[in-house]
Image (cartoon, rainbow, N blue to C red; front, side):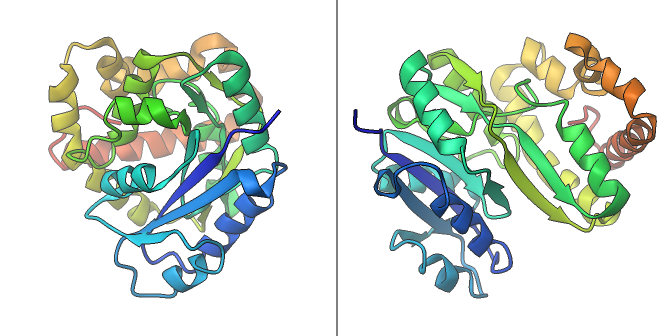
Length: 276
């Protein structure tokens, strides 16, 4: 049986240090190379990102102004039966595409979550990875492998959003069909943790929180989970027996509580009263 064509859409901007490893992980998949298409959508890089990406694929485009628009162009320029969208600082474990394509075909899924593992230096890198593991497959997560026809039917990513556009896309995919989660993982390379840079990035994305909340309504159940204290600071870490991990790794749990508190205070300081 012919394997479905999978288009991997990677968005970039000044990612010369990361893009090569990302695209090499795509090329190294346990899946027929002729059934994987790589589409890179850059956003005005001034370093060697485009040059490096062009060694892996002829499908390199320039588009902006933000990630949502880049991803939408990638969807339109691709030919795949399925889309896998990545950031340049991510890399795939070898079995991701094979597992995702097989499951999507067998179960007729609209989308799949791919568990994300954080690769970072030192204690805070371990804390970030510990925290991220609680979010897999929850409303704090977002599907990454989607049926291309479904992505087009729902209108792709909302280009008015920058930050919560993945949550918005995820919930519209779920409304259009079934979803699942893979066993294979992807790795997100964060390097050396810098608290100031981390909080600045979080504050940057608050600009789109208000329009995202307005789009779905403040009383929407998922909005209340994504932005409310009860779920974001308690429920997501306790549900489905996940609380056992907190007891098993008290030092990492303490570090995670510190980071979540810092994020909450940063949002309050920026004038946004509901935290992501």
